[in-house]
Image (cartoon, rainbow, N blue to C red):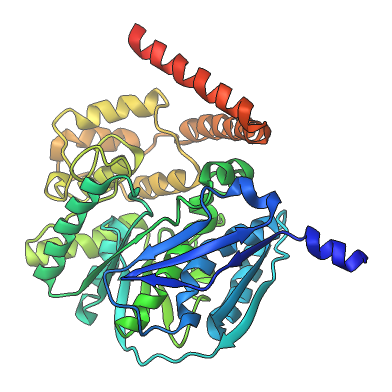
Length: 444
């Protein structure tokens, strides 16, 4: 009797058999009552631009399991699926051991219950590359350009599903880029960041991560790779590249890391965490700069999450990082998708001094990387940046880092309280907050 009760109390997520509607892969989810708050939808989907009808069901389950498994580990929930690729199932155990060491405060008691584990095989020899258009993925493309990697871009990851016109512009730009380069490009659309309540996950688990977010510290590596599984089979891709963000010097847990990415596999697909030996500034200096100087071409860089402009807003921390890094190497940011003027670096210096730039562990690391690569004497003054670099070389970033860390942790604590309140109270607080900001904007 006790065993039966314990089983009933276990948290679970049951995944129905995949339904293919054209090129859309759809799953229905059934989950225990205690997990309900974490879900925004009971449906998960991935939409490809390639026929996946011939892909075995054991591979088709990989995208949804990849999207669920970090959440299941964090909450101790079991997952139930009908079929799954055996190699992928075994790889999850390896990744779990890595993340369990990183996050010992979380349960990791999940059991992936599979009725039928299939040992799949693939005849793929081509290369694929998860591609966002940012500095990391662009340099990975350049590094493996001779292998003609198939580019894979995802809507629903860093580009929200609601930004339809923006996504159209991205597709047009990078389809043109791929055509010029003579490589294939595929576009995937998914609700991977909408079917889970990511704000609640940030509030519950963000404090354990280096960037205080669920997406960055826990989720993005395994979830993005898993989305590609059916496509790799359909397009005969045997090697899948995912660009590194950091190097071994970054000592914090991160959702995409060689120990995670290169332990993930399905069929006989090999995942390669690319560029881990190069810092962001080294990628710009030794890969991107040589490509520009050698071919006279400036690749379009999309680093921004704001979607407020054509490509980049030029005002967020991700834009600042890229603009500073490019300018330091004498690369004109305006030829790579940015739009800055002669006053940019004067204003940027003021923002640093006033503490407007919010630095978490990851951004602190990336800005420090830039500082370490600033020479004693700069041989250019692109956009009047020379004075800024002379000042920034010895600027103490800890002022921005500590201030942001304290505020962010306090805010996450408030969010945890908010999400534990009854829904009716949450609605009242949300309404009052909206009225406050509306009144504030009218007054100002």
